[in-house]
Amino acid sequence: MAELKENTARVIEVTAKDLPLHCPTPDQVKWNSHPRVYLPILKNGGEALCPYCGTQYKFTGPLPHGHH
Image (cartoon, rainbow, N blue to C red; front, side, top):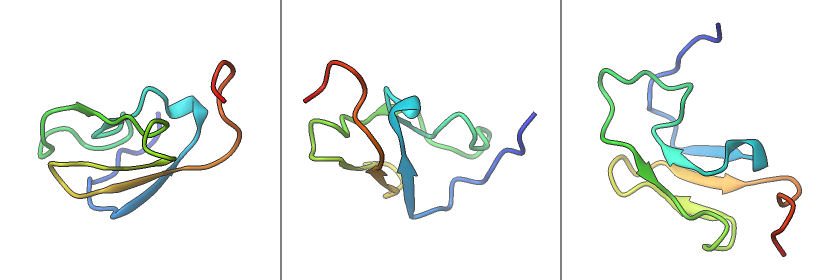
């Protein structure tokens, strides 16, 4: 099992395997996190900002099939 991370990163790069994107992500510690919020990163030009913690997400890599 992968080690869980504190939700302290300010910029996180995500790929198609992370979609649908939500914060906190599955590899972050849950006990001290905020409620899960889904972020429409592809509709926002490949970037999204969590309204709870301010973490910025940047999409990298190829788009998933079915997206232009």
